[in-house]
Image: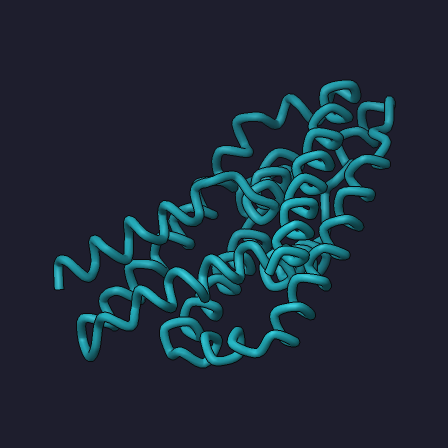
Length: 207
């Protein structure tokens, strides 16, 4: 039991800790929202999406789906288009010079947070392939209660990590009041997202 928990926890941590589009979105909302409670929609949605993907992965349903070349190609292509669009939105985002407007810039409503979190979670093929390919494959060595413990360990990492990211964002709220710094953050985000899209394009062409 202990081995399954440690394995699941360490494996999930290794996959989620590297800074990706999903992490960047939750951190950004932590920075621009007025309180931690207003970041909860992004946190809960991102963690819930990961939970669903992990449950699919350990049930081996998603592993079967990835065996179809057409499905993988469609998934990667949709993800690349989505990342290119997200990068364009971030790059062209122009912070207002007026302080009140600058504070509102990037602050999404509950509905927008949910939609964006679902998008960066479910339309991000890099995350999907990590969860399905790595967690799903690793879970095959466990059965019964050990598999349950492994699954709960991986899910707990997602909930802990996104809560931590949303909380950390509150320590950087001063950045949203500086238009120049905010522009730099947005453009760094765009370059990061585009870099992920380029990586996935190479992966698609070579697969």
